Image (cartoon, rainbow, N blue to C red):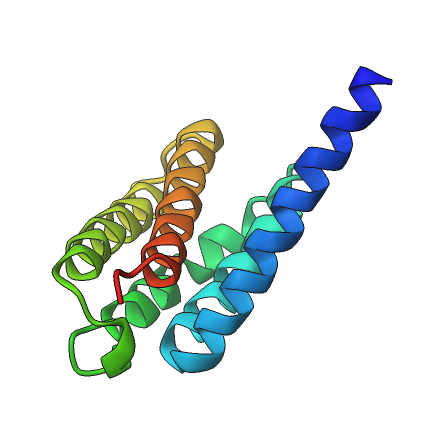
Length: 131
């Protein structure tokens, strides 16, 4: 029973996070574009297929570079968001460097997970702005 409650709590958290991410990406199309490519690359990697990450790492850099001060919707702008975006850009570029240098899949996956976690921080910051 305790396991069932824990699983339900995790599922609820993920559902709420997904809804939050959708509303932010609806407001900020460039973030939505980055998330779509990241998500499409991530799913196959969970099955051990790293080809999409490797094929899309340069495009992820292009899309993360589009996440700049000029594309942030006015209601989402904050110094904290700009700071987290700087970290996201840095880690996305590091991921691409790992791919270009033919790093082991385990290193690439670790960095890709970092990028995914930082993306989630971006969404969190956007959803928790002090009004």
